[in-house]
Structure formats: C-alpha cells, structure tokens
Image 1 (cartoon, helix red, strand yellow):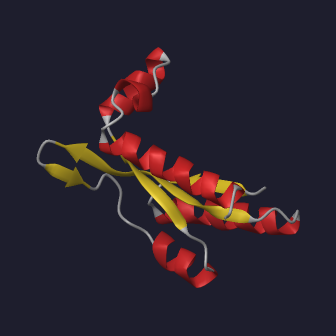
Image 2 (tube, rainbow, N blue to C red):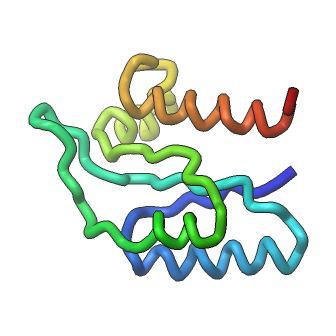
Image 3 (tube, one colour):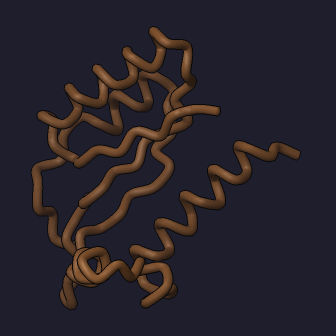
Length: 114
C-alpha cells in the first residue's frame, strides 16, 4: 500500500507536493513516488518546456523519494481522454504510453517484490 503523488514541474506545484507528502506521513501512508505530469510539450521538433522547471527533483533527492516517471503533454493524450480512449490503447508505442507502462511496471514490482 502507498500513495503516488502526481504533480507538474513548477515550483508552485511543489508546495502542494510537500503538503501531500506531509499529510501521507501523518496518516502513515508511505509515498511510493512522484509522477511529473506535463513535464514538457512533445513536438515534431523535440521537447519544449511549457513551464519553468522548479526544484522538484532536488526536493525528491533530499527526501529520498523516487521520480517514478514523467509524462509529456501531447494532444493525443488529451484527445483520447476526451473520447474515453486511453493513449496506451490507441498509441501504445508513443512516448506517453511508454511512460505509463513504465509507471505500471514499477508499481507492480513494488507490490510484488521478488
């Protein structure tokens, strides 16, 4: 059992991450890790940062909390979500799907350690 905290890269979101982690500690729920959502915009010309990068990674390092994955912002994710079609089904080879599969694999491994 544990929590996965999802956030965006900006420092303003980091304050919510800290509050969430503090709350989970208070109720004795371990934080399994963090997912950085909308980490960048995926374009034909390569990644573009939508938001200024904050201190999330430094904070995670200082707290020994893993960054489980980051997910880029892409129109295929939002379109699929609006239509009820997850990107992992419609475009399983996309970078976004790969991020979600990576996250799923990590959580499965945490739940079933060998």
